[in-house]
Length: 121
Image 1 (tube, rainbow, N blue to C red):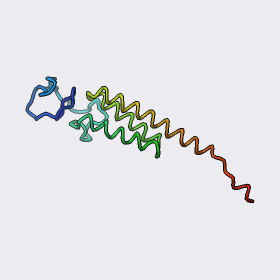
Image 2 (image 1 turned 135 degrees about the horizontal axis):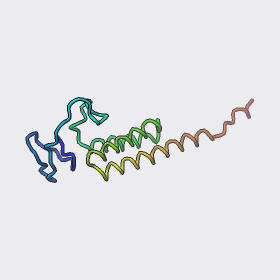
Image 3 (image 1 turned 30 degrees about the vertical axis):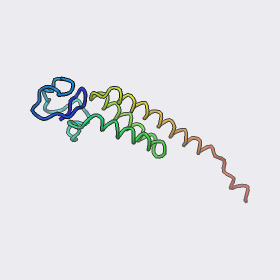
């Protein structure tokens, strides 16, 4: 289990975070959760993992599938921001946007390259 405020790992019996003192005794809702990641095993995941994966996907988005990977990295930054990593989540979102724009600009630049095949006919 991780602290929702600072992301520090906690034992299952603590009621307060050992690092920042945040209340860990938050009642869990049963049934449909507000989180879109509910039920997928991401509830106890450290928010920094979302940041790391988001940044890696953003860098890959420069070269491959900038629409898809860029949007996923922005979403992962948002999830990390909502889970307590405000600064790193915002940074991941900004990196995701910039890498998506660079990837799209590269696709556009490649489409402008002239083809000279008709000169050899």
